Image (tube, rainbow, N blue to C red; front, side):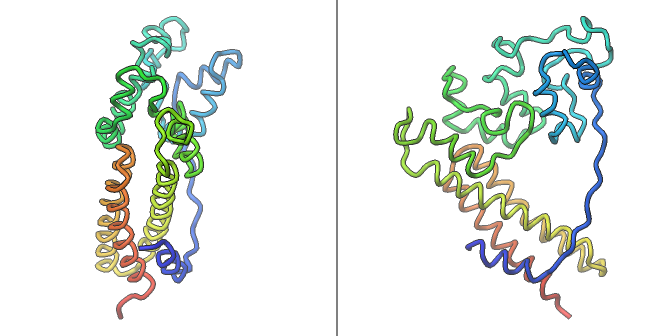
Length: 251
């Protein structure tokens, strides 16, 4: 199903959204580094502060190690290994496992990919989590950024040319982003439904949209685009039905 019917269905809802509040970040490591402007990694720290990791108070020690319970420099940094060292949890070859401690679904999917095989073999061209998501920013790559990244290896002059591969990846990411955005807005609309039974029914249908959407994202982490497209199509069909019910409630 094309994206146009989804957008048209949602436009009919005419929903006004309320702004969401912000929560304060909590990390002793970050607090100490912010209090010492000369400390290394200022840009890294700034990226964390603006990221989903920062908003969820996922502190530096979760990935880098160290002791966040003290402000004394030596004990605070004890056990931290330079990222260039193959033993470090944030070494590029170890990042999938480190990130996978929280992001299990994407990690399991990535392990099915040829990219993961190449990464474990030490191929410097193989992507790792930070290739698309940034070192700490937890970014969701834009479709254009993803296409550009894929072109580095799979473009006409890349190490593994695959015509159309990068463009296909961009198209799939665009579809996922659009569907997620519409589902988020549908969730907001469902919260405004006054009838409890109808609201519960709509929430259950929204959950049924989320299932293939998550599966589509996992297929993207495995770089299996035909499977991604099939799962995304299911999610869009279910979302179109949900939006239709929101726009035209049964009397």
